Image (cartoon, rainbow, N blue to C red):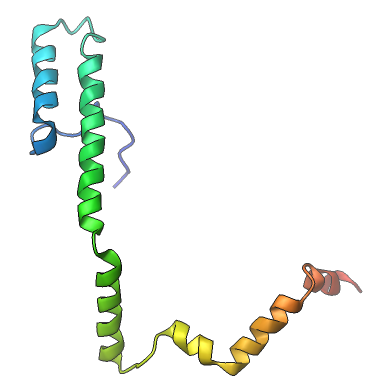
Length: 121
């Protein structure tokens, strides 16, 4: 399915848009009362409706993402319990001596040292 990149004038108006009903009705009235040859006549109503749709989308997304971090943590805890692990991968890495030694070595290396060594023959 291809992404929708403004191939239509606006999202479908037949689904409920509780926050934007006034703007939708204004645009429909404008289209009904103006000639199609005067295509710019309803631009202000269209812009108002677009602003309203944008605000509606932001509001819906915000409500969907409320408590996301907490839900994510709970899901991670359930998964860890299900597979029998008592610590996350990040916690395991923090405790892994070999990993931490290599990490410290990599921090002390001069940037580009590997490239210089690899290409010098």
